[in-house]
Image 1: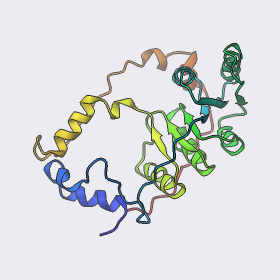
Image 2: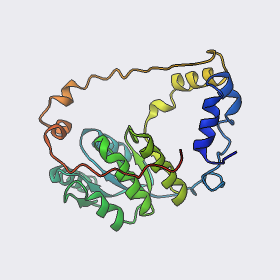
Image 3: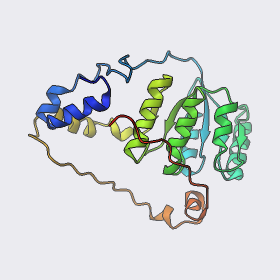
Image 4: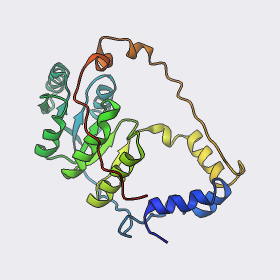
Amino acid sequence: MDSSRREFLKTTAAAGIGTAVGASLPPAHSPLPGRDGTLLFRAPPMDRVRIGFVGVGGQGSSHVENLLTLQGVEIKALCDIVPEKVTKWQAKFRELGRPEPAAYTRGPRDFERLCAEQELDLVFNATPWEWHVPICLAAMRNGKHAATEVPAAYTVDDCWALVETAEKLQKHCVMMENCCYDRLEMLALNLARKGLLGDLQHGECGYNHDLRGIKFSTEGEGLWAGTETSIPPTASAPSRRR
């Protein structure tokens, strides 16, 4: 049997979801083999985490605010296509008596310069969807762990680009979505794995989140609707994991 996880997933999918998947999947704590047969890595703990943040609009700013409350976190660089957003945060850092983070505001691809120049442990991004994969890949390829707002990717090939890059370079790539691990989500997962819902054939979900205030705004996050940026090229060639 092929040791790649894509082949593993194909095999378990063919067996059916529910009871069959529950029997086929290893326990949640068991490591899965990587592409080369090695087990997934575990990064050593850090007393201090140096972070570069890309995208400090409404959502990104809330993350920066939260990070500033954590001990052992240093925000070393901020990146945004709107220079005033970064300047505002630099002033806030000075008010708090914190070291001023470096600014990267030379356009939509300036995150690449941030990833290449800065000595960081993690690059966290809260940008429009089409930039999540390019930023995560740039971070990992420059020796940094990557964290992203949802969704991490929206094509299968881009999902595998993230997985394969993380495996190859031994860097974490995390989608920062608390709803993946809340009680209801874990309950649904375990019900399916234990076969208590029968042989599942179809699933649907909804996203009850009123975004009209953002979509029709000319300020804050609404600026993205009227801003022309260079759309990143396809993040990856078609994956070899077919």
